[in-house]
Amino acid sequence: MATSFDTMIFLSYTLPADALPRGYEPWLREVDNPFFNAIPGMGLYENWRNAEMRPADMLFEHFDFLHPETEADLERVWFNKDLDAFRQGWIRKWGYGATGTTPTPATSFGWQARRLTPPAARRHPWLVIAGDAPEKDGGERWRIVEAVRKHYAIGFAPPGEDWRNPVRPGQGPGFAEFSVHYAPDEAEARAIADRLGTKPLAISALMAAPRPL
Image (tube, rainbow, N blue to C red; front, side, top):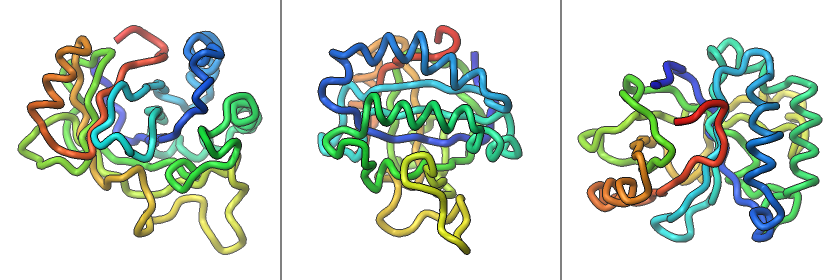
């Protein structure tokens, strides 16, 4: 089933090396993903992990697709008090990779993106994200338009600064636009990645979603 949401917060992050052995994926499916998807104004929230990154030193190993129902719902979702408390608990429980509970520049903000093309005809539990790939390569295409401050991780914006701002040079997940190419299995995802041949690129698997893909 295709999604028709036109706004996305792309949340890029890296987990500590012991998170998966400590049960991160079952916890996502049983606790985290249902909680996020029950927040008023949330359209769809999904969790993904990179199975392979090209190049290997991409700025994130995991990412979430957070779709408010409409762009007008973004603020009430982002500043939901229950969600704030939950996200702060997430940081204490899981952290941000090698940096502990202090996010890196690539994980201090969410990246608000707007849809450039119609949604994919069909979505699957594997995908390829291609950063700044040529338009001719197709896929479901998105453009990052703003940096959304993770106040629950780095504090609220100082006086005179908005919680949403243009992406500054050096900010972002490593690309300004990205295309999403869905695949039914890992082999097809890798074939798509090889056909695209662009970098940065990630081959990614679904960890948790409110309904099967």
